[in-house]
Image (cartoon, rainbow, N blue to C red; front, side):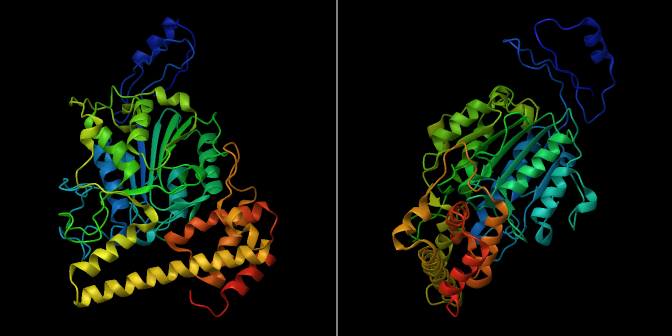
Length: 465
């Protein structure tokens, strides 16, 4: 169905007639005017609604990311999106994991209902790669490797919702398998989508540490994309509905965080309200208030936030009573830094069955995590010290660029530094990802690959990784 952009208050009679008489396919609903009260907004048609949902982690200690994505699917499905228009990336190792006390069920809050049932398994296991995600967004079936083959088959009249939940850091976000998603690569894909007219408008929600760095200074306002992120360019996002370190302090039997604060905020708000009445801007303000441990940010064309949620999340009428913000928080809720949430799981496992084989194994993994973290902290500081001197270590680790600039000028340099470090010092891991800020600052300071490699060898050669 054609999309029409009209300006001013007068709509030509012949155009309205043509629109009313145009055939409408089953997947494209009837014309609905969105009348501008200011005279400057477009009158748009109801194109097809598409969604791409991505959980970028695996492992039971990262339970929450797949739970978030499953919950997002249930919201879209309940509000009328078809499975053929929802594409899901998740490793799918949680529902039937040996540590899951309710096999085949995933919940997203204490005493919550199952959000796993019915979720399409489009890209699971080894198919959960950045390359496959890019292919899906671009609608390129020939570029896929594994998976269902479902891609974003959208067009110029359509609305796209993209939601990602996982670990991130300065300029990148994780995927369960293979390479990370770098901000410049994601932006290249978004620009190709825009040029190919893969959408009329697009909304992006990102749950990750330093998630603002994926868009700051990169996302133009003229691409028809509105985005919000769980955090700015320099801070962690937070896991939520987490158990305590002791098995005596709450009733949780899952031993892991069930959700993420930003994600829980937008999804529970969507559950509680009529999507046809609440705007994206209203949801942003609600989420910003509830996500009180990090700064929720907006990017791109913020004028699009005037649209109601149903424009992207499903148009099925939903008559529900609004739930006050304070009532959305659970008495069992506990927030934890994203990068520390895995320790919550291991400590719970140690406490839960002291003396058992499982407890001993959990203690071993906990010790390995703590040792690895110490190695990361020490090696990065030694590299910076070697390159800039001890007095500059703190500034290189913490310096943040102004809000109108991307976090790094040379993205190839950042990718090279990450690879160089991992080659000589071992994997960064979710905890170590925070140090990509230092690597970005090194690149911006003019450090080349040879100097970075020499510093990495000096810091890590022959030492535990």
